[in-house]
Image (cartoon, rainbow, N blue to C red; front, side, top):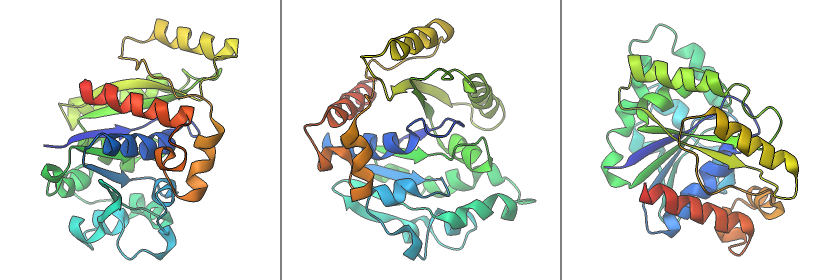
Length: 252
């Protein structure tokens, strides 16, 4: 049975998409079969795997509206051991189209259940908002991984996200848990990064990963080549850190 992890934080620019792409590829490098679901209308995870998001007939949008099956929109082995359910800007309309639909919070879960047994991990990239798309992801997930950028306002909005996770657990998905907090864009040369880490640790009871994702030029470049970091530059600090994170998640 695949473990389903939603990667969520309603703040933008914290490394959700980078983590979705590179954690998935790192898990695949450790011989795990991975399904990536792009729930963000920006479709950056889709294009980060080298998929032309603007020329797709079946995406997660068509899946949610019941216009295609999960098998029809699933792109198999985009890279070795990683399959993708893609997304594009059409998904932005889903929120409005789902008004009045019964049990709309469970649409994604009901579809993913058909293929869950085929994968070791299912990683869902959430949009930077606490919307119906995010709620669908959390209802489908076993746990939520929260990337936090090492910057001054890191804790801002985190309590709101944890409150949302708790609400979803109470009302929609009793097994939902916080998988862990992941520090991204960490710069060991600055006092600020270290202060942010200490500050977050002192405020949170949730599990915090030992692995921190560094600020890394190669990590920033990789998506423009449509490749995860472990294929683009396997010796970079970014590639090594995502492999270490994958190891932590597998061993949990």
